Amino acid sequence: MVKLTDDYRRDARLFKDAGITVPQYDQAAMKAATDAHPVWVHFGGGNLFRCFHAKVAQDLLDSGDLQSGIIVATTHSATIPKTIYAPYENRMLQVIVAPDGSMEKNLIASVAHALYYNRADPFGWFVLRAIFEQPSL
Image 1 (cartoon, rainbow, N blue to C red):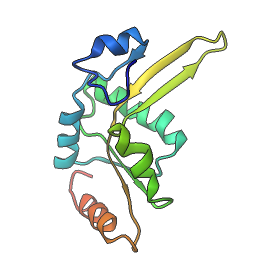
Image 2 (image 1 turned 90 degrees about the vertical axis):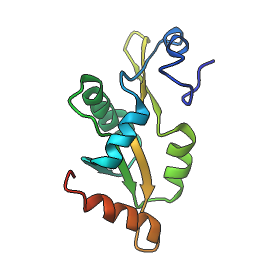
Image 3 (image 1 turned 135 degrees about the vertical axis):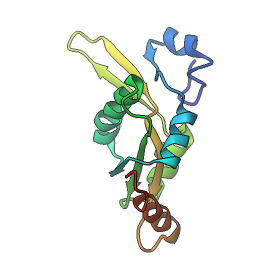
């Protein structure tokens, strides 16, 4: 059984056998590019973001039109980055069910970082402020 945290580059066959399309880029390299030159911060990392915006970024990363991933920032709950993103290395599985019952499955790895911020959380606030001070954003 394949897991979201399995190495999709090294173990591509496991994902293919499970019918899951994988990213065409190296997630670690994307994270490094994001750290060096962030270009996209998304406020709110809920279901709509994970199934739509993250896939748009994935397609841009796959085509080479984007090198930097998404930084997800949330004020809603401190547990979202800790329970939804971190345990799965910021990856998610997008499943599209067609009217005939067939499924398209995509491993999404376009999120470089997920963080919680508000004025009561000095660390998250400090990190987000530093990101917004970057000229690339």
